[in-house]
Length: 173
Image (tube, helix red, strand yellow):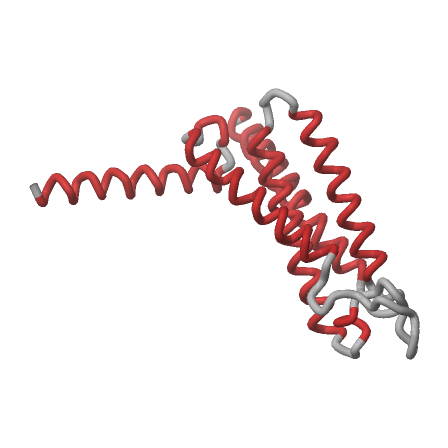
């Protein structure tokens, strides 16, 4: 009986490794549907949390314009804590962007894909506008935040281009 349990655990472990391998190789058509659904739920939760913290940053925002602080700007960024705020903003944006990219990748070739893309673009624009309006004008390095937002998409594009290029080279040999 003990050998059967080890064999079952081995098969489960092998199945999980195969799902993770397919995920990293981005062969989503062959992904286990349960794994795909679980990843979609996780990515959606990460998008929700990062969106919320992006529009309501730690420390909140100034409520009034006084003492050299502008209403609606992030308090953490205004109190000479530039590095922690910038780091928070960059990492939060990276998590948000990576998760939106995962969602788009998982729903590709499904019904209502166009609608999901439009909704995602609108949400990303809303996030960007909120971050821009909360950040002090002279502090936050928005170019770094923009790079963090674009990184997952540029990474995916580079990966796909490399994959296509290597596939073409293999067929010409």
